[in-house]
Every structure is written in structure tokens, then in C-alpha cells.
Image (cartoon, rainbow, N blue to C red; front, side, top):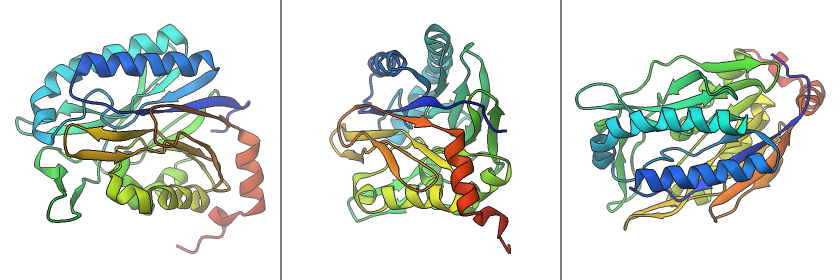
Amino acid sequence: MMFTAPYKAAVVQMNSQTDIDQNLQKAYNYIKEAADHGAKVIGLPENFSFLGGLSMRMEQAEVIAEKVPDFLSHTAKEFDVYILGGSYPVPATESKVFNRSPLYNSKGEEVINYNKIHLFDVELSDEEKYKESDYVEAGVPEPAVYSNTVIGSWGLSVCYDLRFPEYYRLLTDRGAAILSIPSAFTYTTGKHHWLPLLRARAIENTSYVFAPAQTGLHGDDRRTWGHAVIIDPWGEVVSNRGEEPGIAIAEINPSRITEVRKAIPSLNHRRF
């Protein structure tokens, strides 16, 4: 569904730690700042409310899952904005959680949510290993798209999903023109892969990419890359927060989507 007018959108970059209330207060301040600058859609990063070890996240999941929806609902309503709630853990079974990304409208209603389907099980070195599947339950592999005439068609994803282009093609097939990718990308991979992958997703799907991010040190040994960005359908980075916490704002314009898709109608030229 194509929206009728351009609007400002903002990605938030955070350095979340293990104090839930402090993280929520920081998120609130960034949302207020973005709203004060006229942003209609504001996105938070992956694990914005709590970023500790996976086992710690599991232990705090029930508390987080109780606090975060209320926070997102009240804040969206207070500032009359749409909020992409990054992601947060939601109890799935006795031993695992979903890594859930929700979207709230300006009335404070959750209009869609998406449970991360690709789990980050990697060994970057002997010292840096991650096994998200130990604590996270993968969601149902179904494209999550929300559309209205105010903000257009948004496709939801989370972080490691970025490496699976087939998922974004499915989102585009369902009508998405803005691809949301809240992340806590590692510093090790981010410096080489973050922007190339984001630009590729924008270019190959002739869509905006909207990527909030975590940045800096979290505890003693977790470091994220930062560089929260908004990228247009041509693949141009139109706003980049760099390494510091804060916000980055850009315009989401329906005519830009139409212009690029007319110039390079690759979505109509597919053979597979």
C-alpha cells in the first residue's frame, strides 16, 4: 500500500546495558528528541531495553516482557508517533524466549509483531562465539508486513535476518517498501558487513532500509558496531548516526520509491 505524503523517520542508536529502567528512560529521551524534530516513525534497536548475556536476558525476560509493551504503547500515544520497538525477549517456553520486534501506531496500539527467525549461531574466533539458539526460539518463518496510507508498507526483520536476502524478497513480494532491520551488530562483523549488506537489501528490493542500532561496549566483553542508518531505494545512505548514541533522521518519500522502481524495474524482470 503506497502512502500519500512524505514524512520524517528516525532511527535510534543506543548503548543499552543491564538496567532495564535506565534503558527505557534513555529510549524515552531519544523518542522525545526525534518527535520534537518532527519524526512520524521512530525505531529502536535490537534488545533496546536490556543488553546483557543471553542467559541474563532469559532470566529477565518476564519482567522485560511486562514493562516493554506498556512503555511502547504509552510513549507512542504521548508523542503521537509510530514506534518500531526494536526487539525484546518474550517468554516462549520454559527454557527459551522469542526475540520479538513490534510496531505500535500513534494511538498506542500494537499493529504487528515479528519473532526473529534466523538465529545468530556463529564462531567469529576462539574468544568470540555466539549461540542465540541456546536461549531463543525461532519464530514462524512468515513474512511480517504492515501497511497503511500514513506510513506505507513496512517489512519487519531483526539483525541476523539481514544476511538472508530471500526473506527480504518475500517481504517485498508482500508489498513492503520500507525494510526495518533493528540490530545489535557485532563490532567484528559490522565494520566489514553492516553497510554493504544494508545497501544491498535496499538496492535489490528498490526499497528504503531503516536500521536502528546498538553501539559501543555492553558490559566487559560485548561490543557493537553502531552506524544506525536510513538508506533510500537507490542505495544512498541518507542519514548515518556514526558511532555515538543518538538519533538519525531522514525523509521517507513515496515519490522516491516510484522514481527508482520506474528507472530500474528489476522487481518486474525476475525470472525466479
